[in-house]
Amino acid sequence: MNLDLSEDDTRFRDQVRRFLDTALDDDLRRGAERCGSLFQDYATNIRWHRILYRQGWVAPAWPRRFGGPGWTLVQRYLFQAECAAAGAPSLAPMGLGMCGPVLMGHGTAEQQEHYLPRILSGEDYWCQGYSEPGAGSDLAGLNLRAERDGDHYRLNGSKIWTTHAQHANRMFLLVRTHAGDKPQQGITFLLMDMDTPGISVEPIIFSSGDHEVNTVYFEDVRVPVTQRVGAENDGWTVAKYLLEFERGGGGAARLEALLRRIRTMAAATPNGAGTLLDDPDFRRRLDEAGILLDGVRMSEFRILSALSREQNPGPASSVLKTRTGNLNQRLTELALEVAGLWATPHQPELRQPDSLEAPVGPESALTASARYLNARAVSIAGGTDEVQRNIIAKLVLGL
Ligand SMILES: Cc1cc2nc3c(=O)[nH]c(=O)nc-3n(C[C@H](O)[C@H](O)[C@H](O)COP(=O)(O)OP(=O)(O)OC[C@H]3O[C@@H](n4cnc5c(N)ncnc54)[C@H](O)[C@@H]3O)c2cc1C
Image 1 (tube, protein in one colour):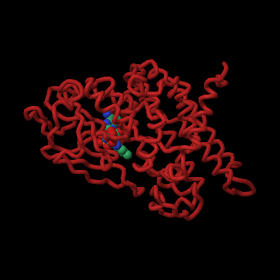
Image 2 (cartoon, rainbow, N blue to C red):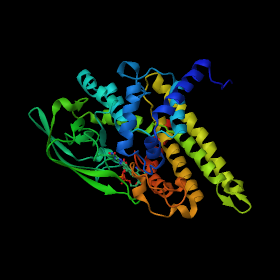
Image 3 (cartoon, rainbow, N blue to C red):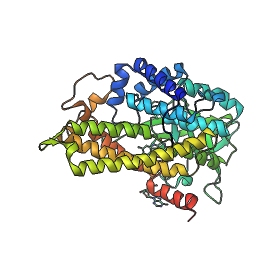
Image 4 (cartoon, helix red, strand yellow):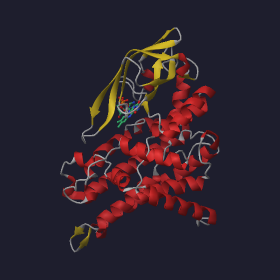
């Protein structure tokens, strides 16, 4: 098997490298380096988003007719890998990776024409209103009521764990329009402006000190019927379609960069007569992580390949979601171990994108404890590991 890059791909990779060399300024690199959260902070994210948009590279996975760059699978992987290796910020997935694909698959022509360009340009920043206080794993148990009121729906209830609702100007959400025999029936998928009267957003603060998720309350919020995606009471079909994209997002290139970073940190950490990298137990765990990474990369290729044929990822996305999340958690554990005592100073203000202050201890240890704490959530967010395993058992293994 020949794994060498073709001449065209090498040229493409070099073009991406040249672009990253000039486009990534110190602020963007520091914003990414100092990010301890699951999501990049809004300010850094949106700056990088707009730079990529101007370059025409903000949505590598989108078909060309909707504004994607028309890259091959290899080019898309190379782009991800180069961005991760260069320390570029990550982009929020709610618009580009979730709402966009749903609109392409289920939206009307008007919805596509209106929203897709605004997702690309960064004019619209989306949040996801699925979970409710009584509806997480059992999503179909959701209860936010939407009653028909002429050419509007009137919404009452709440959503919880809504990532970046404090920044978003749009939300896609699931509402209860009918109390059917089966809870999956009677759910409707809506698009909503966050400045509609009757909405209030309350922060939930993580144990790391980060503000990433929120509770969103709805009191007589009026949403035009034209903002519905799919048929009334058939939102479950749209919801499931979206979840495959949410769980099929991958991230092998970033995990690879993280693994490399841990190796570098360990090689600079004294341990007895040598460094931590000479410790056989530590090396074994690093190598195990490397093997898991190979598996994640292969699963990601499978999903990328399905997407490139304009198929949706399917239940294999649940495999990728659990493996990626578990590996992410392992890597943050190793990084915490390497940082050692330097992980303990609590310096959340230094992780703000505009902070130029030098941290107590090495720069590489600044985010170790926040990343460790925040990564505990990756086996919950987007559907828990237990629920993914149920899906894998049923739909992949046919048990
Ligand atoms: C950091 C973070 C960000 C998030 N962002 C968003 C967002 O932007 N938008 C959004 O809508 N939601 C978001 N969520 C919510 C997330 O999707 C839910 O937390 C998740 O689906 C689990 O639901 P729950 O918290 O209600 O837990 P529960 O469903 O109450 O689960 C509790 C426990 O029971 C287990 N369990 C439940 N059912 C089963 C079963 N059938 N078989 C085996 N075990 C089971 C679960 O695995 C879990 O361990 C976010 C969550 C987190 C942590």
